[in-house]
Length: 162
Image 1 (cartoon, one colour):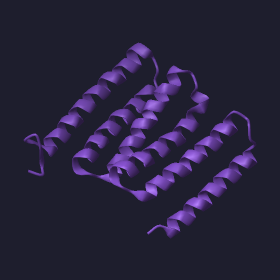
Image 2 (cartoon, helix red, strand yellow):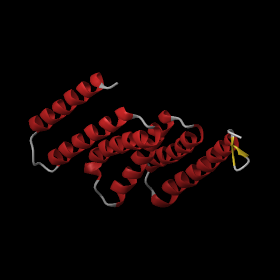
Image 3 (tube, helix red, strand yellow):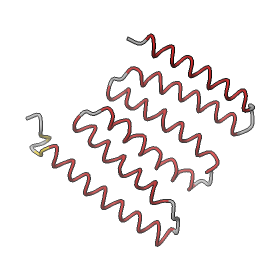
Image 4 (tube, one colour):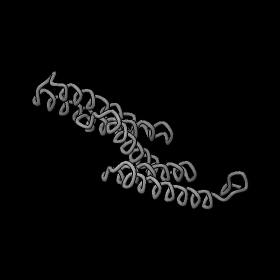
């Protein structure tokens, strides 16, 4: 049957994913407040567990929007924890652009969305420009020129995409 995986209904799997992710979120929030004493961590763990739930939803029902938003939220939360662990929070904006780029790439790969390939590569080059700006190798004007060229190329590709 189409609505079942290993004789288990897809909605039952989705409901189980919701319950488990909610339970893990509550546990991680309590740990972040009581043990770690980081009062901002709850939001990023929320992003991680909502992202995981949306990714499960995407694979069950073949939804490209859930794939994009779920992978984006998962990467935003994971990159924040990564930056927090290695004490590189000033570079978190770089990781945000990488998260958007990876989310677009994953959506293009799993959902056969060709425009997301171009968006992913555009955001990847924006990430390279942002990295060069953050480590003071280029000025703000060169960085803005890089972004302008990338946006113009992306718009041209979008208009010529069939």
